[in-house]
Image (cartoon, rainbow, N blue to C red; front, side, top):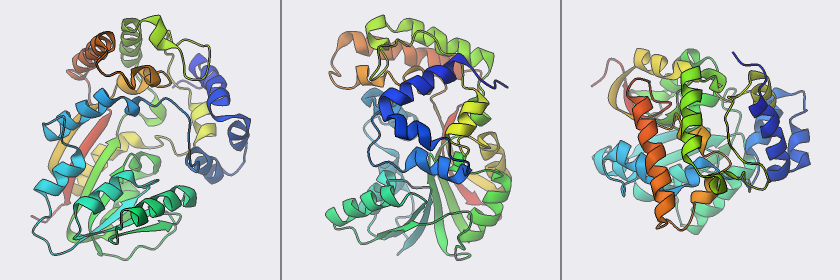
Length: 328
């Protein structure tokens, strides 16, 4: 376990330049819930996130749906739950609800209820829903761990990059998720399921640094700074807990817990074991000018290195559809 690393010190410097001093001060609050909330309750976060790279999104599409031009929302809508007159969906930790909004748009017979503690993000989602004239989606600013969901109400419980923020996963799935589902209900995830607190193995860190060596220096300048991302040292537990006590708190338990309580309908490895750390804070160099031959070459080489790593290592991200055990 790494308590504090050079990566942590660099990240503090980067966050100061990208998100300002008030954001750093928000991490000094004693209340851990408020520190978690500060990580998400911003309307606009100026950063260079790896998922902004179009080729990475196309890669995800192909790994999940078999077609780079088909999103998982489209795949779900085309292949599942079309025969039901109504499908009740509970989306937990939905944030700005971009995926939930898309599912509601594609499936008028779905009734989607989005729950998140960030009232600011949900207000953005509500405005988008009104602009699209969507009446089959609703938004609820609540503390999910304290809210009493109606037992056996939902056909689907849905998580997109939020389940890894919950602790005691076995207990949470049993007492919140399964309790909320109908007896034949389904769990759907698109989720980080890797190491708790991002405590990557030495081998994974070595591969991340191999990938960084592939990238020429001009493409490694960190967003809004004069620093260059020449090496990756791994995250320390102390900074992660201070920054967001909920981040990857029990992520390693997600797949074992799901397999204990649910039957697998589909489960697809998405990877990101290297991509998430390699392109964090330098992704802006690969957004736009998609026809650039050099950038395409770099991305292809990094993708190949990640594929090589995944041959003998479990995927950090998984898309899955699961049904409560004991049903067909």
